[in-house]
Image (cartoon, rainbow, N blue to C red; front, side, top):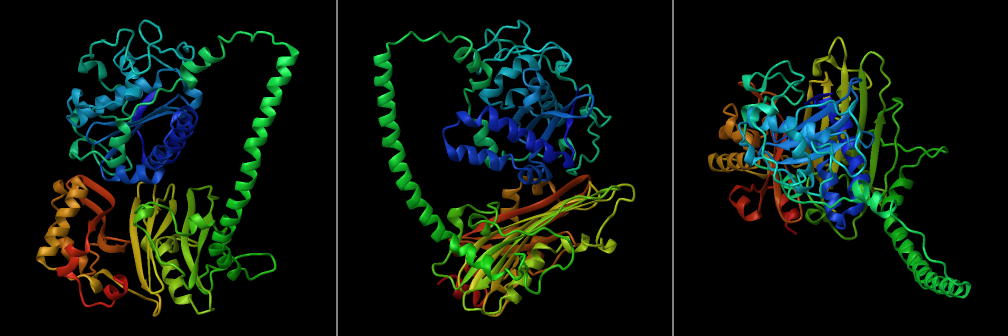
Length: 565
């Protein structure tokens, strides 16, 4: 059994393992739907990757002798364990305890976090008892019965307890020494290779992430798979015999109850169904407008990529506004009675290479005017924003923009979008582009935004609407450092450089800024590829501004008149 930190390309199977186990083992016992949604958003592959790039989250995995991923754990920069799950086929083998031990070793030795400062949610405290025990092969060892732990005594403990008595002393640090890091170097040597996220272990101290902290403080009493089966099914007794007359009475009562439930439900279903059909016309009208062939295929006007074999589909209404990755639904503004409709366009190219890897999954919005007005210019802006990186890779890789690995070229592009502001005059869309530019180590995540004047099909750039001086540059830089603590230890990026990006400059091909309009506030965003003194960071951060804060820096652009209506 090998326990090591995950590489970037392993995040997808890791996220899948976590979600599969959570859906089966925990979700049925969580009553709060928002809690479930928050967890799924937190465990999403894209979120895990972005947090890893920022040195805010570190993921570990357990692998068997065939290099199959068996368990996954995550610990954040503050020492809070946020994920700890074994695959469904690897339950009750002590893998969670082994992964937890490795993460504790990493936190204490690699990041100098005191052991008492490591925060472990109550639901995973049961694994701390075995975490300090002598390491054993949990895959080949004897499997315990459901509901039992592989502890020293072999006796079952109550949920949330770490041992039979709940008072087992904390093992000495040397009991946690890493035996197989997968890097060929001891944590204590402070010499780390690039893990795929581009950062070493002991370089930064970051604040706990938003949901990772709140989730880490929750506990679940999951008895369904650990204890519930033995108690609910293994100990059932046969029901006493009832008289036939009593049986008919019971059946009659049940029949009446079924009628009382199904009749109102039938009426409610038809009422809701009619409402949903009326709402979906927003999407269906757009779909019909782009249907141009007898085979029912969809096109993209003049912006379509021709003869590429890409699969396309028109998504449902809920997806036409895009994936919720930037702001919440409460922050999105959609005007009433718009003169256009929105359709989500989807490009998917599955991997078919034998000598490497090549896969694309790109989404972007397409608008259609009800009165037939030409929307080609607007749609071209949207398509080009989503496909900026995709077009350098497909259908033919443009080597001047890429860094192709000669032995194993790795090309991939995954683009999501979110519409944050929609009126008859302005459309604002944010695009998140997660891509590999020729190598599995060349992994990036960029944020592009487009704020479009719909009447003229022209873009409002950040330098058109905001005036950057030294005061604004300093305030912007401070907000960036507050949002991402890593920049406090990144001397190669300064307040002056932040101000330069607000002037529309792309510094060193690695830093640029843009902005997003929302219902109440405006977000100014920095995309960065930082390399300096062994510190490597890829990703983007957003800073939130009120209209009052931006008042001194607003230009005379007509955007403000349209936005403030």
